[in-house]
Length: 378
Image 1 (cartoon, rainbow, N blue to C red):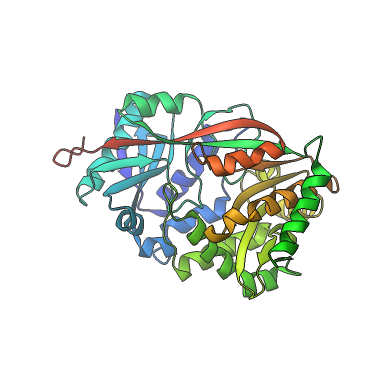
Image 2 (image 1 turned 60 degrees about the vertical axis):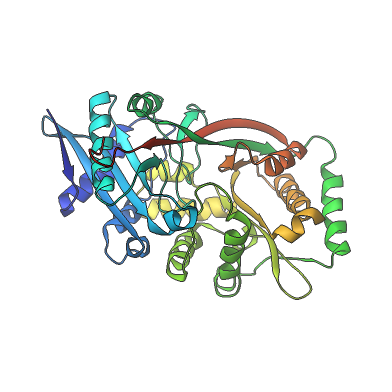
């Protein structure tokens, strides 16, 4: 018999956070979340809990946890897009269609009681979190920023009646065999032509105090029309900055300013920490912190999080400047390649820029959508 239990107690919170680590034990591709950070979603003062309604459920079979799911009513996103959607995320389950159906049905009933008429996911509190179900690339290296899942998840989701809403692709980038030096030279010429200046912060403190608020404002401006984006307030931005500063290095966020010291473009990069998070099981241990410092000094792989450009500068070749910077980054030192994070499959402006690299599309993720029967929550 399958029972669904809402997560309320500390014991249930631990079971919720620990379940995927047990489900994927021994899987060489799974990258856990940071264990301690996952408990933040249960805190009343967690910034997103002030602007969202959320609920977490466990599925139990014969007294044993066999699945979990979180439902989120992202009020700001619904207001922005004129929708009545509940997002599902942190969905993990054994390969059992009845367990998956019970979890989805429970979230739908919860959401229907709040006036929602659609369920979509996997989507988190914002587009800066893990999102999308992996449907291609199950034997590829995963980034820490995105979620791994077993292939059977897609079948379980579609069996419940979900259909594709949107796909993202991920790509592995290496320096081009030809014209790499030319791209770097073109980048510098474009900077000179438009009176722009490339700037790298000298310390994380400078980056946070003087630049990160501007970076997030530009994220909102340049990404606002893309699927699933959410308005962020000062508190939610500060929360992300707190998370980023542990991983990011100041020179991993190249910024371009105009002559009026207005931020017009940036790239957000991270040394890949996927391997060391796997080694620690998501726990922050002395060994993890030691490996983190080594990775930050000599990364073999860099994760590309975002490239943001003011719309008025897109036609002036500023994105090409960022491409030149990435080519230069790959060519320097011991770096092997760059792993992009999610890029919408129909965002041709961005995808077209990747032609300048030696590239290989290695993963695809999907967000699903399904209508909710308001009366029955089915």
